[in-house]
Image (cartoon, rainbow, N blue to C red; front, side):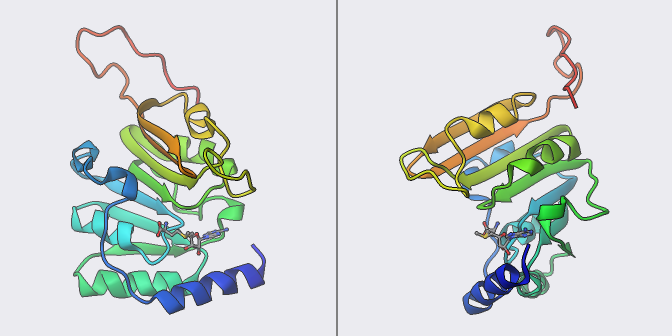
Length: 195
Ligand SMILES: C[S@@+](CC[C@H](N)C(=O)[O-])C[C@H]1O[C@@H](n2cnc3c(N)ncnc32)[C@H](O)[C@@H]1O
């Protein structure tokens, strides 16, 4: 990412100040889908509302963003709530930072889209893990470089089991699970994921 772009994010985050803990939008009313605990990754975490919410639910959380201002805001939010999060500065144009290798029981990426990361998300997701994505979409809106095309998320994660796939009004959501190998007693053996 160019310095000018990072500075633009820094100034947006500094105007917004410290946020509040909040579930990912896609999980509102669906919190029961969350695994009982484990490791979580919040990609492009912004000011850390989701990361801190996950930490308060007992997850060990890594949260990545390119903006030091966003991460400082997240750290302030965590401190105010007695939560611990590993804040990791990194430019996702180069992939996940070293150390974010998973396996993660929850991977969240909300309002940030980079299709180059899709195979990475699948790779770091633990068996039984939950993927929660919300991106801008071209469905019911103008196409553009930051918007997913119709069906993009479902196609990208067709090796996972889709729980929710919604598109419309310029937004797309995918909630998917990486099935455990042979988890369901009596069911036919699952095929291993291709990654
Ligand atoms: C629209 S905000 C979403 C923040 C948060 N996920 C949320 O839902 O509130 C997009 C975030 O992506 C971060 N970002 C943009 N490009 C990035 C990059 N190349 N690497 C890492 N973070 C990036 C920005 O700093 C910003 O915090």
